[in-house]
Image (tube, rainbow, N blue to C red; front, top):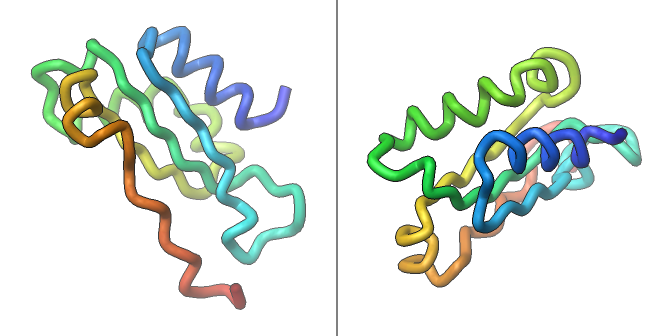
Length: 103
C-alpha cells in the first residue's frame, strides 16, 4: 500500500470524516520523481467539534505517527467541523510553491 492510501485509510477509520482529501504534493518540492513525502490533508469530521485547532492537528498527527516518523517529511493539515467546512464553501487555499531546494 502506498503512503497516500495508508493516510486515507487511517484517517477514515479514526475520524469517520464527512469529507477527506489527501493530496501528494511531493511534486511541488525538490524530491525524486514518484516521491511520497509531502502531503496536504483536508478532513471534515464531527469529532472536531469543540476542539481547538491544535488539538485537531495533534489528533491527526497521532494517528499518522508511524508515517510521520518514517516516510512523511511535511504534512499540511486542514481540519474542520462540518459547519466550518460549509461556511468556507468547501474550499481551502492552494498550497504555495516550494521556496527552496531548486524548484
